[in-house]
Image 1 (cartoon, rainbow, N blue to C red):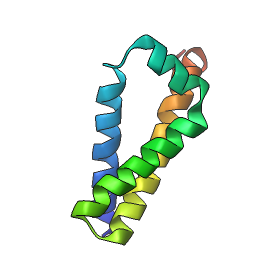
Image 2 (tube, rainbow, N blue to C red):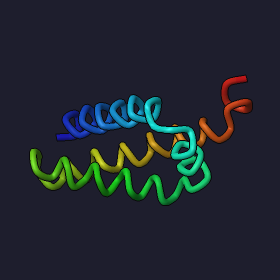
Image 3 (tube, helix red, strand yellow):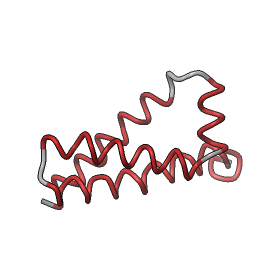
Length: 85
C-alpha cells in the first residue's frame, strides 16, 4: 500500500510538473503567489481522482505525497535563485 501510494504520488506530481510547463505565465505566477491555495486544490483533486481507482488509505497517502511535492515545486519556483544558484 505504501509503495503504491508513493508511486501514485510521484506520478501525479510528474503530471503536475508537465502541466506546469504548458500553462500560461499569468496562471503560473498566480500559483506561485498563492501557494497554499494551489497546494490545497492540487491535493484535493489528486485525492478525488485517485479515490476512484484505489482504496481510501492509498489515495490519502498519495495525496499527502503530492502535497509535499507540490509545495517543494512551488517553493523552488518562487525562490529560483536561492535554490538553483
